[in-house]
Length: 259
Ligand SMILES: [Zn+2]
Image (cartoon, rainbow, N blue to C red; front, side):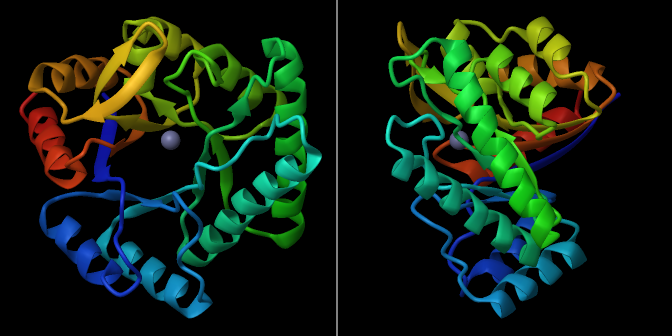
């Protein structure tokens, strides 16, 4: 049976971070993904160390979501360089925090076939891995399974990045539903044989092109996904990305405990 840690996306401001972690802990949550959506807002090393220490004491597993403005397969080299810089900044801050996973959106097809885009994105990951190694940062790059069909990041594409570069991964199960029109549990299971899974989940509204937007998770959807995860024998972190991520994580945890 899998062990699952539940927690929200969003830690709040630097000023509120420690009290928010205490609140998450009091609610029974054990994970939190810090959303650096528009940039790494924890700028000061002392703040990073302090927040990381509090999370460790409270038993909360921290991860980071890198800025959305990232494309490792841009046609413009400067944009690829800027993307790597943004992700690496998250890695540096992650090392202060003891947040071992840095989740990012790998990039766009930019008019290329999947394989051609993959070559470029692998190259970016290899280069970033080299920097992480040289700096001695204890973090793992985790490209995410993406919900829009016209964006690089299918289950197979992310699994390929993992297999070729040795990077980590983030399975956004809501994105899988939006991209494939179903959860594709068997496909996910085969693509990621690793013992530790980093997942995102929430309700999702989607159409022909895939993801439209996240919504509060319905109980039935939680049940379907948790039933699948429970039967695996893995260490799972589920970050809830619904519009009400804290309350929704608590619901997920309660449903799981009653299964
Ligand atoms: Zn994401």
